[in-house]
Length: 398
Image (cartoon, rainbow, N blue to C red):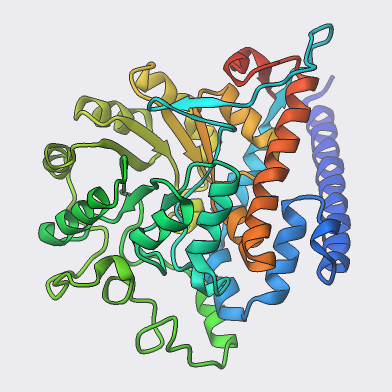
């Protein structure tokens, strides 16, 4: 067959696929628009929560949560890339009792889905991180709080009725970093997650446009109408931050990680790893876990999805420490694929705040319930009665 004919057929197939995806997306958007006025009982999936959250939030707050960098393509690709993998269905397996529980650092959780760190949650609901923490408590879910949370760790721990992981921006002042970690330890945090992907100078165009469209002067959420969490977030209360210029220093090196490892006496994870070589170096420097993440596409327009980076990282780690993943998770099938490619647990960011913005604590609970329900269904279709049985044989590259 002539090469020109092959190329023509390939192009036609691609356009048909693209058209079907566009139709599906537009149909879903139309239904979501109708559901924007609905009751919580009418919500079917996380996209419905997204539509309701968008209607309820002011432009700048929506844009702050939704923004990527440059053209926002990495935000979209994080989710789209899951479609590059297909799940292999298996029959004649007893899946009448599907078990979703996972063990992470000796703790058992009912599902592999955890609440990843999301900053400034008061921008989405008056209950802020306390509503999220209460939802984590009712669902026994792991919660990772942000250094830039709207609430201090002590109140979050009380609302969670148990310990939470502490996500840490290192800052360019070691004394500040050390003080944040010390406060987290006093509150009983069993794990510190160092974020290394949030570099100063990111180009958040969607956030800028949303702020321009918002005529409010939100002094309750911001200082001088700007998002300066180091000088406002409760986790920095009582700490001298006068010398801080960058929340993630441009000069951070492996020496910093070694220094941090020596200072942290609990589990230490590094969040923001996207390559095998970086993951291997982290393990060599004594970290206890790797979190594959690109900050939900908020910081880097690399067009490299977390699910695409996961196999490389898992291979480099080679079972020495757990590998977690966040970024682009919207469905239970996404969770399944991440687990199949080697993730121990999977974090949700935007879906949890869609739920929070839409309905407060019940909305976060609903988001977690949706992932649990969808994961259980796909595990039955794949013939896998427990999370421990989800491995690379369960998926294939499309």
